[in-house]
Image (cartoon, rainbow, N blue to C red; front, side, top):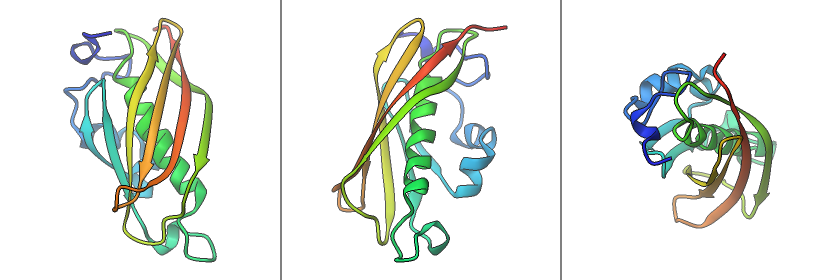
Length: 147
């Protein structure tokens, strides 16, 4: 879908949308502290800083926080690849964890693997400040027809 960036989805967002506008539409992501750093249909980047309130009892970033970042960045990638007038919803999400985050910032980079008429599949790679892999999430998003 090469021209998806020029055509807003049902939500009214496209690759021309500002990160602030997208985050304002996602109150949970905003409250968690997720940032959006790059927005194109081919690549969405975002991050989440380590903070005590996002950790387990042992000071490791909680898996739920890690998955929230991956889900948010992956969903934005799917959103930017929707056909005109369509919406999206997560159908499946699988995360593999490779290492813990004890400090710094967790970074996410999402790329579409498949952009079809019924489903969009996105892979999100999670890394720490040193560029080391923290995890990987693959999610499937349904393409919902405009109502």
